[in-house]
Image (spheres, rainbow, N blue to C red):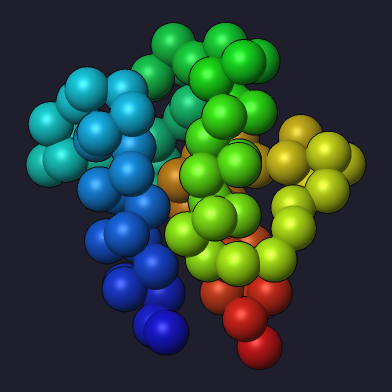
Length: 80
């Protein structure tokens, strides 16, 4: 799966979960600053990512995922 395909899936998940226009979501979108996500939102989003892409994301890794771009790169690296 290409990084663009991963981004498109993540963009759709974020648009649905945070009720935001997908066009406003970029690789630079920050979960806490731009989407006002709290810790519960982030935990639920990580669980959704695990269900969507398979595999597990450790708490340590999840703490490092601050932007959409971080998530795209993480998922791409896990699929190699």
